[in-house]
Amino acid sequence: MAGHATNQIDSTSLWGGKVSPFSTSYGKLMMWFFLVSDALTFGGLLIAYGFTRHGAQASWPIGEETFNSLPFLGHGYPLIYVALMTFILIVSSVTMVLAVEAGHRMDRKGVTKWMLATIVGGFFFLGSQAWEWSHFIHGSEYGKVELADGAQATVSGHSFESFTVLESGHHLKKGTYEVDELLHDFQSAVLAGKVKDNTFTSHDGALVKL
Image (cartoon, rainbow, N blue to C red; front, side):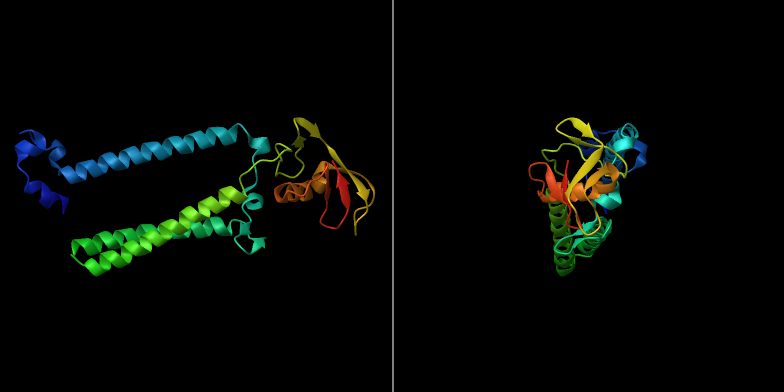
């Protein structure tokens, strides 16, 4: 379609009287400009991500532990929501292509139908991103909390390597425990805002102090 549109425009107006670069249509050439610029942009982002992750291997969060929730369903669904968002993004791309194809056929109802489907998918994806950022990606007064087992957590800039159980629970007894033994409980308490006066309750009901 872009080729037909180019043929209808006087070459003096389109290319200043010169020959079309690579003997291609204006629309196709601009599409290649877009694709190349898009590839460079995302390539730069991926390279930056690679350098960042390589420099923080010891403290990089585990994806399955970070993104393990579904809206209204709670925890225990590792990467399911991420996979769902990816699926919606791919489907919305397909519906956009179908809308363009319907436009080529001058099918107004088809364009409306597929564009509405694309818009709904876009709103779902953006809303999901907002939900993730507001639930998963935030800090706390306790600073960095490592998600890898055995890693040290940090509280107010000072590292610590143990927890003290003040009141026994179903399994945990009074005493001192290594940080990796109660790290997940501490993470959950931090994210839920249930750490008070440097103490929190473990999953089995024990009262733990940092």
